[in-house]
Length: 215
Image (tube, rainbow, N blue to C red; front, side):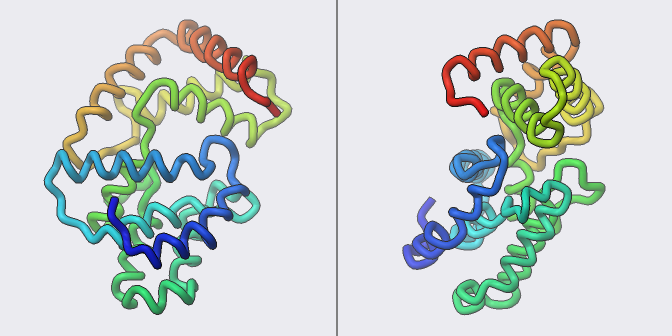
C-alpha cells in the first residue's frame, strides 16, 4: 500500500508502540494482516480509495487503554479526532470519515458501516483462516478469564465462534472475497462437531505452547 512517507513515519513512531498494550491476538502484527487483506479486497473488487485515509483507519483501529476490549473502537475514534498531527494532515471531514470507519468495525454491530473505509476495515479485520480462529479465541479467553482451565477456554471458544461464524452467525462481509468464503466453509465444517473442534483446538494450542515462550 503506497502511503505518504511523512504520515507513515509518524504512525510508526507514535501509534504503533501503543499496540504493546494489546493481548496477543490483537498485537501489532494484526495491522500487517489487515493491510494485506484490505489490499486483496480492493484489488478483487476494483475499489477506489485514498490510501492515506485507509492506512490511517487500519493503523488506529485497535488502540486500547488498559486493554479495554468493550470500548476500543470508541477510544480509537477519539484518539483520531484529538491527534494534532492528523489535524494538520487531514481535513475535518476526512478525520470524521476515519473516525466513523473505526467506530463501525465491530462484527456484531446492528448497522452497516457508514463509509467504504469502514466496510473495508470490517471485512479485512475478520479472521480468514481456521488457525487464526483457534489461536485468537484461545488467547482472548485466556486474557479475559486467566483462571479458567484450558478445557473451559475451549468450550468458550466453541460457543463464541459458533455465534460469530456459524450458519446464522453475526459476522458480516461486504465485498466479494474468495478467501473469506472458503474460510466460512472450513470453520463451519469444524464447528459442526463440537468434540472434534475441541480436540483440534487443544492440539493446535499445545503445539503453540511447545514452540513459543508461553505466558
